[in-house]
Length: 126
Image (cartoon, rainbow, N blue to C red; front, top):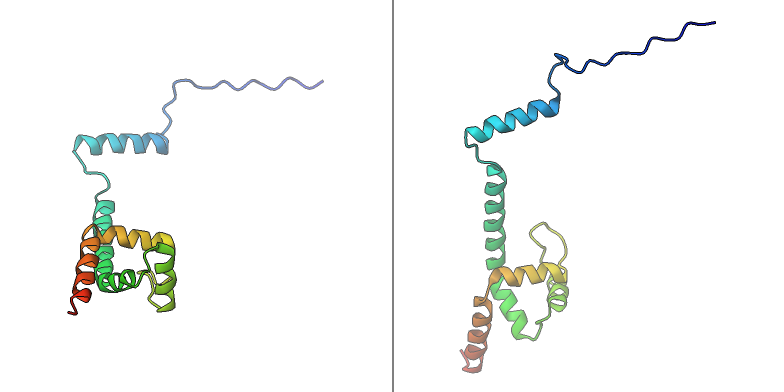
């Protein structure tokens, strides 16, 4: 008969090289000790995107005011009209009620004031 195979003995205390997760954990600990700021690139990118979105929204302010004065107040109707006018979103796509809602939110509370002022100016014949 065959002899039984030897049972492997696992080394509990080995001098194995550190695993990748151990190296990552150690690197993070060292970076925290140096007060490294995490996510700086993401914060910079978010600020740049926010500024670009605000500039785009401001460029559409007068058109949105005109459309809202005409009675297109619901986001879905505004989206339909912006698509009909072939005005692309910042990414070059089509408008949806959600993107219009975000546009209106970005234009802020001053949009309502601007609409009221434009209505009064139109009523006064200006």
